[in-house]
Image 1 (tube, rainbow, N blue to C red):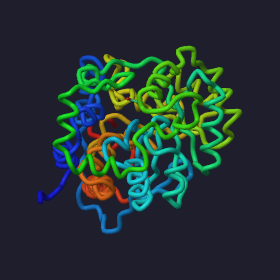
Image 2 (cartoon, rainbow, N blue to C red):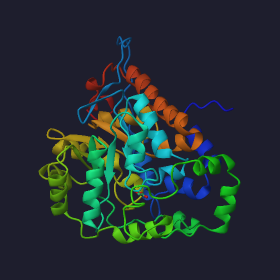
Image 3 (cartoon, rainbow, N blue to C red):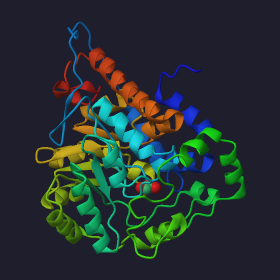
Image 4 (cartoon, rainbow, N blue to C red):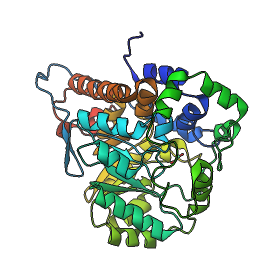
Length: 380
Ligand code: GLV
């Protein structure tokens, strides 16, 4: 058994255990993957400021996100098809997040449904919403999230049109899915994955299954979703969502100062500075390069979260230094899930939290509230 010391170790194990089509789906970016790479490159370029001879014997990574106490400023991002990385993936990831004291966000396009997850965990989770053309269905999703006591609605606004991920097409993970023989053979060589998915609650899109008239099975549901992404989506719709969901509203996918200001006007509780993990507009700037501008623009009014390339606690510290109130991680925990189910997600969270804690100590920081732009070299 290998000793897992970092997210990269989990990635390598997941790469062996999860069928290629689903591993690639999570890992890929859109088109030439310029933005995907920029997210990592620009994070790594930020140098942390080494400080010495500060008493750091008592350290605390806890803080709040959306007013909820968190053990570290870290939330699990919504990831579509999580239950195909490992059977019951959404339930396992949510349990691991709750045990670690951080929020979990369930995707609209999940395998386990809102109700499945709510029945399997004892604390509220966040629900991510894609706005579909069928507004009646959107309203019912919002009502289901409220009935399940979800503590925040995370509205994703950067996917009205899908950025192409070449590898998904090559693997047949298209809409509708048409997995190739090579993918099916690949799945057959992953017996533990097959067993976990077969013993999972569902193999279809749980939030849609049984809720969309006349649609049954992954194929027709996926086709329905493909037809349902609404290219007309605008701030008017956000106004409508705000009126149907009076609770905490996070707008995810903001990368521009003007849009950040509009999000405040629309009544957002928080925004997530995000380019969808480099999966949408290829050629867009890295999330971290835009973060300070958006924090300067709206950070006094609402909470500004960050996602895009976080693989270490050092990355988390970099984003916090540039003003993020908290960070969402996607691939890092998905690799953990693929590598080891619930324990793998717990490991991913633990790795990042411990790296954050040590990096805080080595930069002379004891509490999250002490982190500011001076933690990064050349940014005074
Ligand atoms: C969905 O959110 C995706 O990025 O595939």
